[in-house]
Length: 151
Image (cartoon, rainbow, N blue to C red; front, side, top):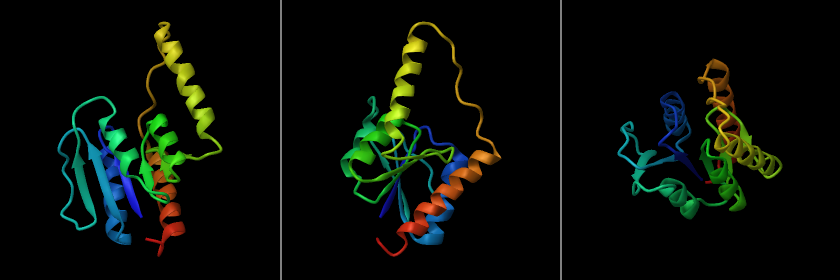
C-alpha cells in the first residue's frame, strides 16, 4: 500500500499531516511534483520529480498507482483515473472521491470550466480552515485503519 500525493498544489499543512501519518503507521508515502520538494528524513516519505509538462505528475501517478493505494489530490480527472484503476482518492479538504460520486464531480468541474470560459468569474475555493484539515486527517485515518496489515 502506497499513499501518492499530487504534491505541486498540495497545501503544506496537509503534507505535514501525511508525514506524521507515514511515520506513525510506517506507510510508504510518495510526493510527485514538477519540482524538488522538501521532505523529512524518513524511510517512509520520498519525493519523485517529473518533467515540468502539463499533467506530468498526474500521468506518473496513474502509471504507478496500484489497487488499494491512496491518492491525495484536488484534481478531479486524476481522481477519476485512479479510481478506475482500483485505487482510492482523497482531496486535501477531506472529501473522499469514489465510484459513486466521481461522475458528478467531473460533470460539475466541466460545467464550471464552461462558465469560466464564457467569462463568469467564480473565484477559487475558500482558504483551508481547521474544519477541512480535520476532515482530511479523519479521511486519512479511516483509509489507514481499513488497510492496516494489508501492505
